[in-house]
Length: 276
Image 1 (tube, rainbow, N blue to C red):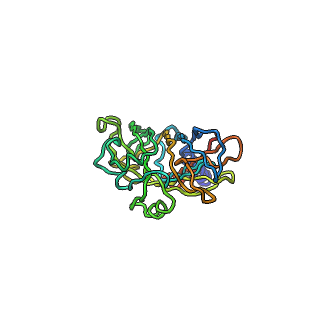
Image 2 (image 1 turned 90 degrees about the vertical axis):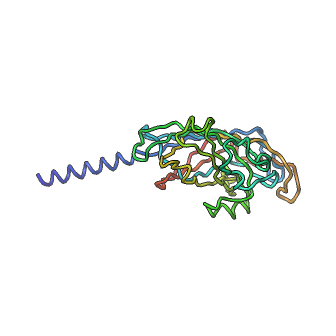
Image 3 (image 1 turned 135 degrees about the vertical axis):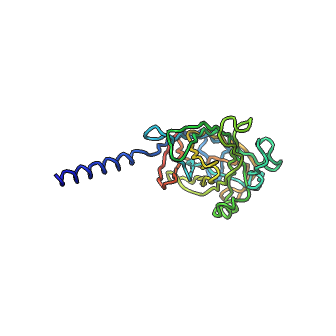
């Protein structure tokens, strides 16, 4: 009888662990959209806009786990931050500004794109709770990093990057339990997708955005559109050409791959891709 009890307890423990393992984030990336069908090359980049998005769900229908890091890459798309005006990270994250339309003149000139994020917020100990929190995002070309994340400082100085500014809708707090008005710094890194030179945007989410007011804030859907902004920059070979902030410089086949890597607060790392 004692052996039967031990076996039953072991089975119950195994089922409990299996049940816990089922609770995980699931990710879906929407296809990358560009304003050009041109393949482009590093010597003759083709300016383009860039639209992408992704959706996060939970395997048990609960509020998704909070995501700590994102890495977003698009096949054969290169960035030329020096071709456009820039502002500092401090200017982009100015907490005294509650509407990005009223950001400093330097950042208005440095604006690259915009979008929206739908979040579900709730108490850390209750993932059934889903408090709607819709925010708008605005991206700015920046020249400095975020001191809270020291690695962003030299990387943005070296390669450039975006400030991704998050603002709750007006009137204040109407859609979110906690008003938020700040930015995060996202440096560019050079990677290859399908053997093609590509950019990757990497960033950590500050605790003020992950846990506003002590809540857990879980990203559910996001859509971002980076505009076709042009300027002059040196390209491969040394020539100075008109380029786009985002430019097509190659492609493996007939479609491009967008790749997004998500790392949640537990350290779980998953990658999702889409083609267009």
